[in-house]
Image (cartoon, helix red, strand yellow):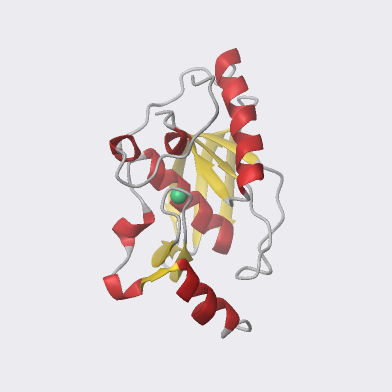
Length: 181
Ligand SMILES: [Zn+2]
């Protein structure tokens, strides 16, 4: 595991395109240390989540850390949740399309279709088997982060290049002019 300062890989780095490995032992001290550092890192970055491959660690782990912002005023506030070896076990037929961004693609937003509701299983930071379900925004974060473990980024999932915006235009057109949607 990396001991140096964590750095976010940007789109174009081939390691963002790797399939990450299952974590054999979440109780491994080095892995626990990495997890704690990643939790702190995503808090500093103000991200809604981050996946290990984004900091050049090819392990099947990500952090979800939802908090409200101007686009998602009703986004749940959650303690940073460590998700290890995640699987989606069920997806709703209902699909929702909404804007996503990513720390590895700064300045770009895209409209991405995601399942509105998912059932998932994963290991917690303490190695406990978790079975739960997520809807709406949390389901979107989970699907976005899981994609990173398989070398996929949100741009791969936009239906049309016409549904990509630069951050500044997105702020102006989607957030400033459309606050009540
Ligand atoms: Zn991302």
